[in-house]
Length: 187
Image (cartoon, rainbow, N blue to C red; front, side):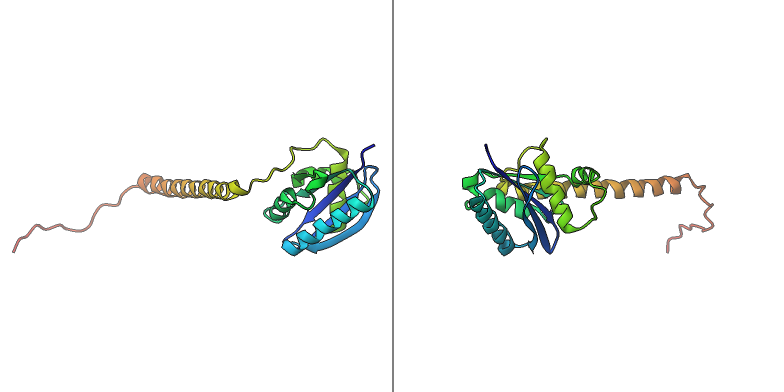
């Protein structure tokens, strides 16, 4: 029978929290925090490899909430990692609404980073998953530029509509008669 390690990650700007579960939902390693930078990602990578080897897991699934840009670099790093590639990892990014709705199944759990990481790992364990994340390194700048262009177009459109609404109001007002005398004297 295949043994799968499920890793749930709760990402934040300064640090991340990870939780490791097996296929029965048993916690393999107590949740731990690590910095949200390259050394922190390498620390997580090392722990994943040691747990995979110590507990003889065959496959690996990793998920993180897609919160702004906080998890993007970590997910990209793990998906492209050559150290954990022998375990054929499947890396997922979950919509926070998905994990929030799933967390409602745990009414007795508080809102902490450790519990959030557990909920992400448990949601991963339950299945019905989105498409796995694929490495998109060359397309990230293009995606950012496209989103920025969209933002600029929305901003320009909003300002244009604002200006036009004021122009319509000004044109609808009656114009007061000119009290200036215009003289065409030439000297």
